[in-house]
Amino acid sequence: MRIPKKHMKKRKIFICIIFLIIIIVPLIYIDYIVKSKIEQISIHYCNISVSEIINQSVSKVLNESNTEYSDLVFELYDKNNNISSVKIKTDKLNNLQTQIISEINSQLLNNSKNKIKIPLGTVSGSYLLSGRGPKIEIKFVPSGSVSAKLESDFSSAGINQSCHKILMNINADITAVFPSGSCQTSVQLNCILAETIIIGEVPDGILREYNS
Image (cartoon, rainbow, N blue to C red):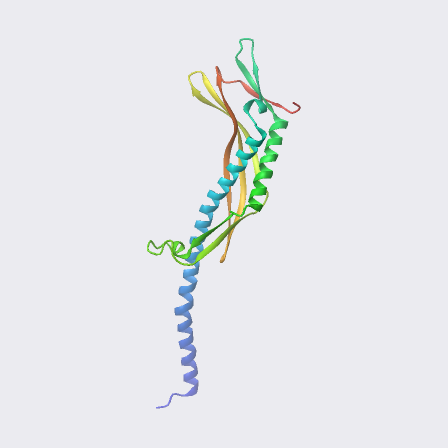
């Protein structure tokens, strides 16, 4: 018995729909899983790479400027020759902060190492395929300017001793770009600019010097 053309057409359409569902749905699912895995890997390596750039930039500026604790702070003593307070040289500290931020921004924009290549097998999450297959390139680009906040911290360093640190809390917003899309992350790092051990009681306060 011959099947009518109308039924044949419907049958072909039905087969095409089933075929598309069988092919497309798994592809969409695989794409979602792979993209999610790439985002996780990108954020992980982004934090490592950018943290390294920040540390190297801070070290470079401090070494080139030969900055020491005494360059950023005055220690004020009382009549008993005990440190009563510390006076921050704000203008010098702000200048140092500007140099560090400038160096970090420069490295993030120009550093050719701001990219990695991950084998597709590693992205799959399979132990057997790890390190195998074509490589996916992931690039790291700044989403905006690096920001920083200066902090002064006193902590106990033993009996009748305290440690004074001048810290810079650095934040960098980064976009990781890969073939199937992109994702954003923020890298935060606390870097020590200078520190010293103070013998005696912890100073009562910190004075900021704006015109040293």
